[in-house]
Length: 256
Image (cartoon, helix red, strand yellow):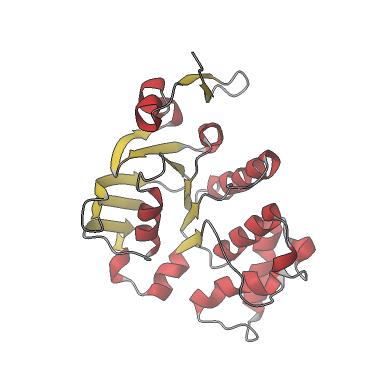
């Protein structure tokens, strides 16, 4: 569904060094690596904030760089690492902003816009605070609202840059459970940047491991999240065994 071929980018020197990978419908890809690996840069290339020096980004066989910003926004839902709400908006108004890709303006919503906003708020369990100002929401609530805003245009690809950062473990699990459930229907795929290795191992169907702009490994969590790969990438004494309930890789720190 989504293909990245030989993508290169840099500020004066190489930052991304020819990444090539694909994401299938229904797949949740976890993008892992230390700070400076190039994860957020790759995300910005995918959503159109930056432009690659060379290579291809294809969504359903179409070149993203040949699309208008509005068309790309309809196809790719983006949840940024941080989002500042500059104006006093209710949660419903904030979610409806995601319909701008359809050419809508706040105050001129159609019945379809409202129905779609209600649908995604039910999916993300945010309906109960539809009338509350976004600024008054907790961190976990706001992250779910940002997810609803990204979903309201019915994207084909959902891109989330560290969506569980600064959340407690309960809200981290809830957020990734929602993303997993949304992709399970097979109508869209998701790319999630995270530093939470154990959560990635539990929820991701595939993992892309990066270091210094290079792809170190790409495959299932069991294939990629090995001791040798993780110790090499993170330069830390990590130990990998199996989670006793799920069988997924379990990562711990060895102090010996």
